Image (cartoon, rainbow over all chains, first blue to last red; front, side, top):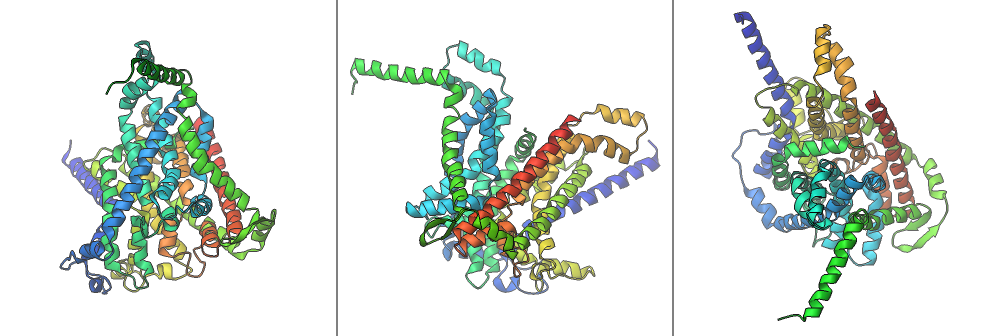
Length: 276
Length: 307
């Protein structure tokens, strides 16, 4: 290789990395700004020009736990997202398996309708039903409504994973005397454990992030974190520092989750997107 | 404690009977719990919502009264419905187009072997996973026209600042910016995965024939990647046409009703004005829009796959 072309290659590679850096800036900047907002005092947050260099304080993080009872809301979110995800797997895994195996397209239509319907359309009937049953502000109400999102999602994601399981393996298990439930539990489920992990995490993220249902159906006892952080602006005075700290606490767990399964999230969403 | 032998046998027979029933009727038993659950939590509320759409009812005042199609006639004379439709088309049209075009372009940019591709993937998954309400609040801080960091950055490089969400003229583009920020990376990752799975042969043939980069993109990459693009668009449109969290958190439909989509209006009618019947009728309209959009998209996708 000539010297000239090596330099040209070096320059092109440098230019590529500069471009890559620029393209990564928007996600990184908002993430950093969120953390910085949480580490500044209230006064620092409303000073102009905005401060990039300052002495950070953990006071806001202490305050959201001490004054706003944030631990309770984190637990509420954990409970609801955990229950919704667990139930979705319990109900969704056998269903997805059966849809993949027996090509039950009609159930697929049911799932599509569930995904297409605006959430507000569920909200009004559920609000009326739960008010009648005196279930407003209970984990039951929140979990049931979150299932509307997570159950179709789990089924929809899992169908393509189950389709990749070779039928011969199950036939062999059946011949060896396994019952259908045994072969499902012992043979099939371990083969799709990547898919289970992926759909569990995606389902958890969507339930954790869900705002609308909790906004109307939760109350002081079961308020989840998105509603709790939203309330920081409806108390009249906007507490920017508190929002920064609370937002960081909410976003961090799901970001870490997503980071660890980023490959299979993309794979899962792509496979799902390419389904008929 | 011991169970009587005959009782144990009886329990075993029952268990065997259940097991053999499951074996024989697998296609029925496996999906049944999920189908029943979906029926209870999805179909019944949708049915109830549909019924309410034909009634007049203020929540907390008396019972729903059947009024036929009056709600659907009322919405033709409601100026906020027209406004909501316009805002919806403006917001969704602009954000979906930008997300798709930028997502494709960025994916093409990153579609090569380079050190650090793992880091890009890790960074790009963040906006997808981040809680919409939480990041929308951070955007609201950044978009503040007086003390926000965005105007500071713009003016410090010599560009004029913007009123962003404080002006009816700029509020939709500002909200589109937030939506594009949140969802373009996901489209990029999906398209990138699609690009990696494309066959190599057409590219080699094209190179032998002396096609240039633009020709290769236009005649090979684009047709091959089109099903993935349309599928990604459908996936996005399911949520985008019903965007609530970002708009509600940042502007609540304001200033005035400048960013009130039809969807947000239907929420306000039901939960701020407590007009359950009319609100339900609006929700039915939103559902029909999402449905029609997706049916059309699906047609396009199937025909793109046939090529």
